[in-house]
Image 1: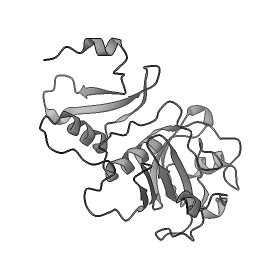
Image 2 (image 1 turned 90 degrees about the vertical axis):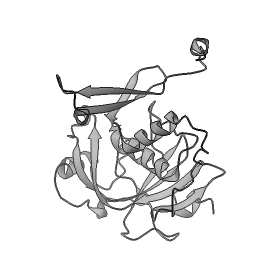
Image 3 (image 1 turned 180 degrees about the vertical axis):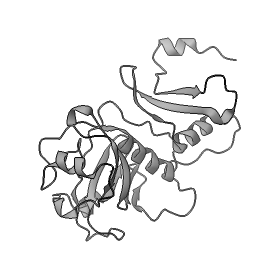
Length: 240
C-alpha cells in the first residue's frame, strides 16, 4: 500500500461526504442496519443529514470497483433517454428535465412556522449543471414544449429568475455520473434540503406560509391559480 498521508496535510484531498452506520443494539442481522449520509461543508462540518439514497449508494459502489473496466461517461444514459429529459448540453454539462405534479416530502426550518411533511406540488422544470440549479413550476400536465409557459416555483430559497440558493450544501457530482444519477442527485438534494427563507418577494399570488401550512400532510391538490408567471422563457433556458 502507498502512504498518502502527506496529501491530506497539503489539502490535496478534502472531506466531501460522511456516512454513519446505525444498527439495533445487540443485533447482528444485516437488515437491521441504517445508513445516514452527510454532506461536508466548506468548513468541514457535517450538514444536510439524510438517509443514504440508492443513487449515492451506486456512486459509492462505482468508487469501490477495483477492476479496470471502462467508467461511465459523464451524463451518458444507461438506456433509452428518460421521458422527463428535455435537453442535454454535453459541452456545458447541463440538463433540463421536468417532474410531473405529485406528492413530495418537504422540509422547512422551524422559524418558518411550517411543519415538515408530505404535500402535493405542481409539475416542476429543472435546469442543472454541476454547481447550479434552477427550478420553475408548470401548469400543464403534459410533457413541456417550447410553447409551455414557466411559472415561479412555489418554494423558498429561489430567486425570481429560478436560481436555487444552495448555501454551502452543493452536491458533489461524480465525473462519471450517468444522466439518470445526475437527475436523481439534484432532485434528492433539492427536496432533502431545508427551505429557510424567501428571496426578496413572495413567488405566489397568495401568502406562501399559510398555503404550505394548509397543504402539508393532506391530500389537497396544489392550487395552480396561485402560481405567478415567470419572466424566464423555456426557449431562453435552451439558449435558442
